[in-house]
Image 1 (cartoon, rainbow, N blue to C red):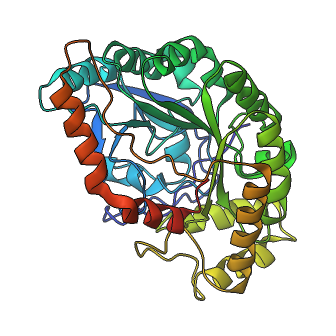
Image 2: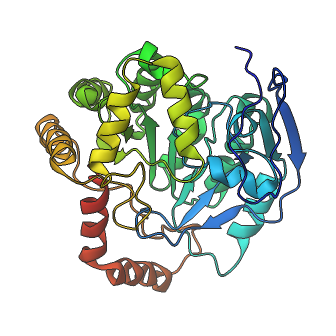
Image 3: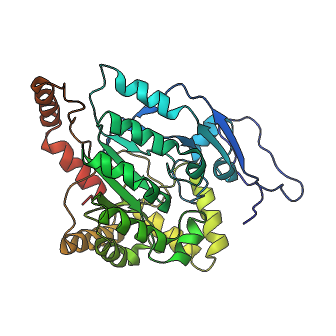
Length: 362
C-alpha cells in the first residue's frame, strides 16, 4: 500500500520539511547498524519488567497509536511515515546479548522482547535477530517474556519450547480488535487478527505459557470488543490477559488522529471525545500511575467489564512481572538461589499489587 511521506514536526529539529506539492513516497529504507548495547533498563513504575531487548528501531507494522513513535525522532527521523519505513536493524544484537548474559554481574532476570518496537515485525523473517537472541537466552537458561502482534512468532516455537523446559517463558499476543477490518484500519501492516488468534492457539498447543494483550483499549472504538477478544483468546489457550488504555504522547496524537479521520471519518470525533473523557479533557496523561489507564465513569466501566470477564473466563490473576532469577547452569549454588528468593521477597506484595492495580493484569 503506497503512502506519501508524512511526519509531524520533530521537536528536536530546528527545521521541518513542508512539501509544496505531492510528498514523495515513503519507501522502505533498511539501515543496518552495530549497536553499542542491547539490554535496555526500564525504571518506569508502570511497566512490570526491568530489562528488555529491542533488535529493531522503527516498526513496519505502522500502528497509528504506537507510543514508540517519538523515539525515532532522537535519531533525526520523523514519528510518522519515517517510523514505519526508515527501519534500523541491530545486526549484532545476539552477540551483544551473549556478552551481557555472560557477565558475572548478570543475575538472570527476565528479559522482555520487546519493550519498544515489535521484535517480530516483518524484518525478523529475514534477519532472525529475535530468534538468535532467544537462542542465547536458551544457552543461559534465562527467563523470557515476549509480546508481539505478529504471527511470525510461531516460527520460533521450537526455541520457545526448549526454553520453557528450562525456565519461565510467557508469550503475549497483542490483539486489540476482534475483526480484521478494524485491525487493518489502525494497525495496517501487522498480522491479521485471525492470524494472531491462530498463533495464540499454536503456541498454547505447544505447551508454551501464553496470554493476550488488549493493548490499547480505545474508548469508542474497541471497548465493546473486550468480551469477544477475551473469550476467543481463552478458547485459544491463553492463560493470562492484560489491558492498557490508549496513550497518545507527543507526536503520536497527530498521527493517530490523522489515521482515524482517514479510515473512520464518521467515528473520529466520537472516539477522540471519548479519549478526552478518560484523560481529564486532554488526549494524553503522561503521569506515572495514570498513563496506562484512564479515569472517569467510562473507563471505570471498561475496567469492570475487563476484570469481570477475565475472572469469569478463568484467566490467571497475576502480571507478566519480572520472574525471579532461575538457575542458569548446573554449577549454580544454593546460595545463588537463596539470593534470588531474597530479591523476589524484597520486591514485596505491594509492588505486585501496584502493577496489578495500574495495568489490570490477569
